[in-house]
Structure formats: C-alpha cells, structure tokens
Image (cartoon, rainbow, N blue to C red; front, side):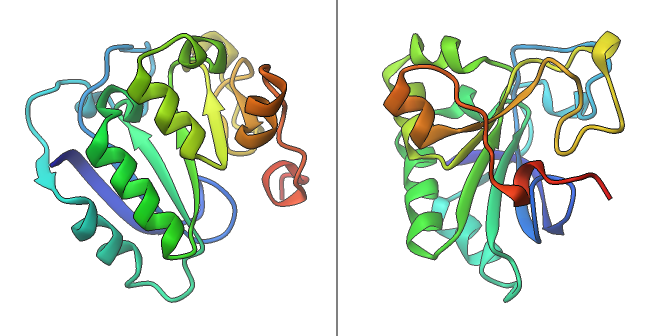
Length: 172
C-alpha cells in the first residue's frame, strides 16, 4: 500500500494542463519554508492501493497528467509506487515527480529509486531553498530546482532540461 497524505484532482500548479497530484506521506528533507510540512512525518496519511489511486485520477476526463509530490515520493520507491506509475502510464497519463533529491543523487540511489526515476517522463529535482524562492518560476519553487526530461537525462547519464513548450513556456 502507498502512504498518501492527500491528493488534488484537476491541479493547474503541479505541471502543465489539468493534473491529478498525489502528496505522499513522509519526507527526510525538511526544507525550511516547505509548502507541505504536514507531510514530513512518515506516520500518518492513509494507505491506498495503486489501483485506487489510478481510479481517482481517471475520474476527470480532462486530466492528462499525474504528478507525484509530497512529502517525498522517492521515499516510497518500491513495487507499489512502480505499479502506480505503470498503471498511470497504461491509462495514458504523463507522469511527473517532484523530489528534494537531485537527478545525480537518484542515479546513485537505491534500486527502487532508480526504477522509479526510469518510469517517469519529467522530474522536478532539488530541495526547496527559501533563499532562492521565486513566484515567477513555472512549476518550481526555487531557482536551484530543475525541470528535467527523464528519458533524455537517462540516455545522456546527465541532467537534460525539459524543453517542451508546455513545461517551460512563458509564465502567464
């Protein structure tokens, strides 16, 4: 079972278009100024199956993407999370994740973290840094965070910024 702090249907702030965003329970980073400090504790939240979560995402006919947020999704990297992402992709959803880890750290991480990374389309990486906070950044909270194209990054074995207009277009 996945430990979920909550979810938001039809989010417009966690990636392009309407998205289903899942906030996972538990985070080791504890970034000062975090938007979701209630998700830090690994206790709490509710247990949900991957199938239950995908069924919720499918309720909105206009939803085209799923965003993993937190807490820290990579703290739950394992079979259940991989199954959730697999089912999302089978349902036609683009899958993105926010993480306090960097791409480079995940490449050196656990087998589960590497597998989850490989299953994603887009990664917004790096811890939130309050001193680099900007409300002008699209889909990022602080300037150190990157929006990465995961397939291209894995092929290059190095971070490759997402260049798709829908992710990095002008802030409106």
